[in-house]
Length: 209
Length: 209
Image (cartoon, rainbow over all chains, first blue to last red; front, top):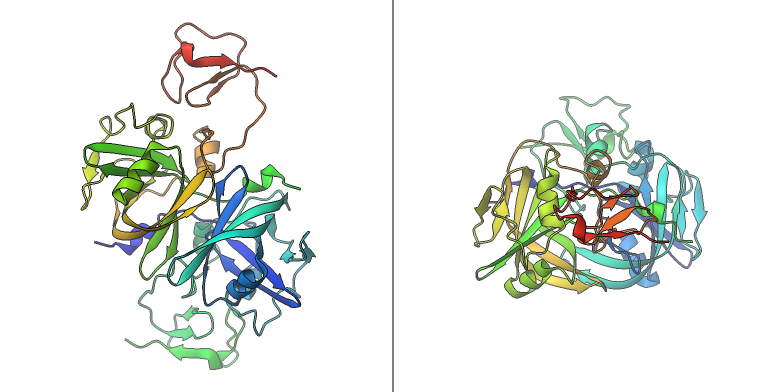
């Protein structure tokens, strides 16, 4: 028995993970940041092997994780969570800083940041788990962190197929091929703009079966 | 710069992890359960190497993790979180079931359970990270999961020194040597019973410095 609803009882936050290798910047959204030890302070993140950010972390051995605030906008989450850093400049629309190791991180709509050096990793199949020693940690604002439940229930956020916790769901209407957003309608207006990834009508496909 | 307050912005739930090796049962509390992949469904837990439960998981290669409900009582958390399975029968005071692999789990005050086979592990210093393939998952009740923030803010819960997220804090008064509970008082009544671990006055030590 594997009731998928059981997995929805696990509690998470929402985090932006960024990295840098030379001139290449990358970033994505994860819900899997966890502190695992206190002395020294170490955290893990689970991240899909196909993510460009994973490649950059592997090359550079560094990542910076930002805790998104409850006030974070869908535009920020959509930009980092539903586009690929290979072909999208993710950082330019947001206020950023560069940490002690030269890794950029978004410093708005964010509660805290952790700058980490990768000290170990574990293969988990589709994903890899990076163990990072936290070399710098900083509170960015006093607002509370966004929980994954809040992201779903209040912000109407969706989970992309590459996420650790993705669950395919039966749906009808039209689905955005870029980000998975579902438009629950029989028709699509010509000026449709995806509320998650910002793409147009041409990226929608009719959901069948 | 390593601002410890930044770590308090990470979001967690509260979980009971149990295991069994022959006639030996063990269980403890963790805040580090995370789903890391969907196909197959896999989760990680970070757990202190000194915990007896860690030894039993290593020997048996199995663990069952239960998501505590928001309604879970401090007695349950105190029993599993602040005693050692070596010298305490943790399960007898609570309603339990045995999963498909013979591992007991608490089925009251709990939202869901995951029965896992260990497929890999990673050394993280004081802690070990177990990667478990979820062989059975089940919703236990419809109440919401307890978040770690709720545990602290609403239930006045404390974090024991062996936890992944332990932060030493300056304190005054008396500290329970068993569970770390701090009695903020200049005197201790003779009939003192620790509200967390249930021990008496003889286990308190005066906080100095």
